[in-house]
Image (cartoon, rainbow, N blue to C red; front, side):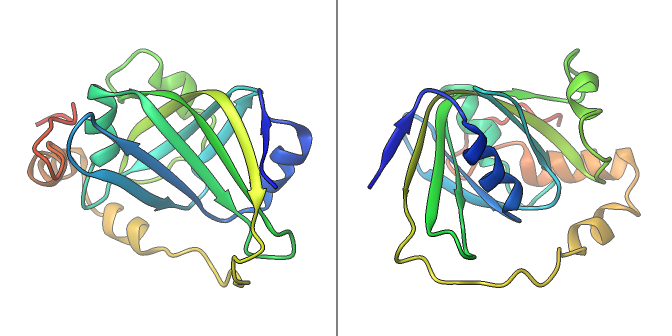
Length: 180
């Protein structure tokens, strides 16, 4: 059965630490809903009601565009191992770019990742657990290094050119705030 919490509890933090992947969902007031899997060592719970996660360059940039129009965000962790549980964190998020004053303080909480593009800061107003009884078992084999290999040879100018071409607007044409 689903249970609601006002903040993360120790059991939630253990579950998050055990996961190799999490999911993020956002939506603008109109247009498509975006749901994306995220991996790498890119997430930190920095308080009972705060999560930050480092977003790296990808083929799209829906989250940034959506948050400019509507700050709602949901994060989800799903246990694919022994614990049949799904954990969701709901709240309001904002985008922090490398040009922003807060970037350095947040970024130092992570190991550097080539192609780091934004950090999202989520103020959590609801934590919910639900059963994962129908979620299949999966074994984690390894982290992919494809993104690192793609990003490492690119200098800042090449990365910004890619962002301008691929990451400046969402699928629905909303600006993302990523430098052009």
